Length: 284
Image (cartoon, rainbow, N blue to C red; front, top):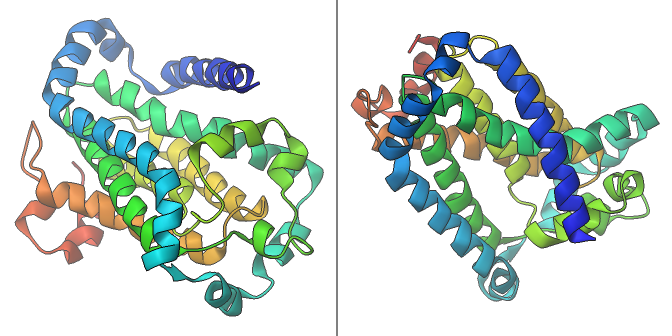
């Protein structure tokens, strides 16, 4: 069952990559793709290996972190519910079958595409800074997210109040539960990594908008769709989403702060993190 679901995800995401490359990447980038990609991959190998290490640790610690969280973490579910009340339930009541199908699609397929496509596209570009920044931002997202999962115990709305919030993803696509159970546990909802990583891609696309002008609106739309889907499907609270946005901003700012990166100095590396707003407004 798991293999069948994975093959379906790979097939759909591959098709989206082909479509994305035809819409986003310039012909001159494709012509020199092999040489450029080889050079860029060599340049980002250290941070790519670091990201791989963080993902490996995340996979090992994910199940162990549940017991550790109950020992040293704070159960924030009641507090989050007290802050939000029925917000997610009310949002879910506004959805239609068509919206649910769309949100289910972007939550799984759109999310994987959004995270992987810019890695391929940026690898084909002469400027290695976008690829380097994105990889480092991913690393910070996963590292900081894992710390939050250990320190904060929180159940999502579909688990905490099932009488009000339905598990629409599983109702719309039952086999998706086989996949999601492999990458997450019920108590790891704060912050929403779907939100943080999606917003991270959009922020990097905004920062390096001159690299691929057509990618920014696509990344922004998908990031917004995925963010809303996490709540509409009953998986995350609004608080998780807000925390995910904060994590994304911190990760991108941190990536620019700590890494000059191959190809040029970091804008944020020369000033306080408060320059993020002006940094985003500047062309690369």
